[in-house]
Amino acid sequence: MSSRWIPRWQTIKINVNQREEIACYDQQTRMYACAKCSPECLKGGIPDRGSYFFNEKDLVDHILAHKYALWEKKRPKQMEIEEEEENEDEED
Ligand SMILES: [Zn+2]
Image (tube, rainbow, N blue to C red; front, top):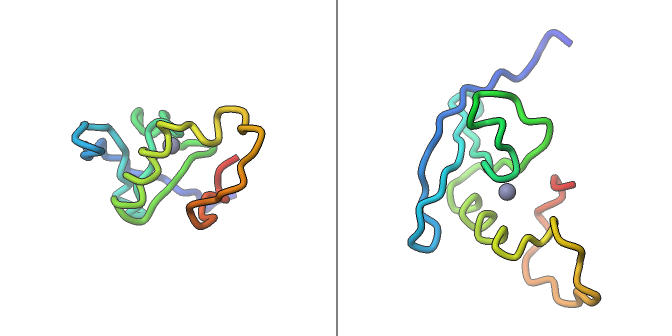
């Protein structure tokens, strides 16, 4: 493939619940990436997978969700209530 996304990551700090978190911002696509999901971005690499957001607020919401590690943990036996809209489909 000749057309390849070459991100120009910038490490940014964002404020999540009074705490400072590191995240990545790509100057090329103007997207934010979660540094927890895609630590490669901190080194300027191209993450194979990850979570990308178009605005900082969505990124903050996502990082807050890490607290519960919704997709990393085994799911609780019952997850009857989906409080958020399903917009996490990019996640594995
Ligand atoms: Zn993440």
